[in-house]
Amino acid sequence: MSLALRFLGVGGAQSPELGSTCGVLERNGRPLLMIDCGAEALSAYLAQYGEAPRTVYVTHTHMDHVAGLERMFYKTWFDERRRGEVRVFAHANLVPLLQSRVADFPEPLAEGGANFWDAFRLVPLSRGFWFDGLWFDVFATRHHAPSTSFGVALAGSFAWTGDTRPIPEVLAAIVSGDMLVVHDCGLRGNPSHTGLDDLAREYPQDLLRRFVLCHYASETEAQAMEAAGMRVARRGEVIALAGPQAGA
Image (cartoon, rainbow, N blue to C red):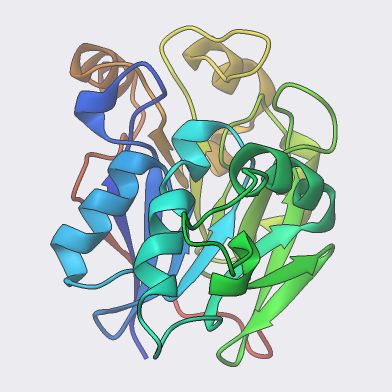
């Protein structure tokens, strides 16, 4: 079994030219799990794979990470083979936020007769979830309000923080072996996002060597972070992953 992460987008909400930050876990060259689904990310997914996602993990409910779900509703509802079968994995704390952000419009169909979640199989979770024989760990990150943002990890393969401030104590408990760590980072941090100076202050060098950075503002920022010795993801890049640990 070969695993890889494909970056469909690497930018923030104010850098649409870089695409909404989104990754797809691929197994043997085929998409297994989409991580976040912003508007640009869904378009990139359709262009890459020629079909809509079958599984999505939601890190948090900012629109650059979930706006594509509304469009996915229509693509899924009108495809009887997929209606009600597309899994949306989300921490239980995010369910009311997802409802208010993308699902609460009075009638998703002008004709009536359908609820937003009828098109999907919503899977609320806490510690993690099983999917297709693999166990994925879920962990809290630091982004805006507490308990509103959650990363995802596959033991031995990768950890994806989503948008976050530094979380060294969390990653220390999760990362092992040859795991890749996909981490939010821009050139300058703020109260909701990590900056380049935060990395050096908060993380040990042996962990930083595993990092690949995304959710930055421009190619100029990306080059500056590379000049500082960090690895930076680019839109469309595919990174091979180590195999999951036994039992994962």
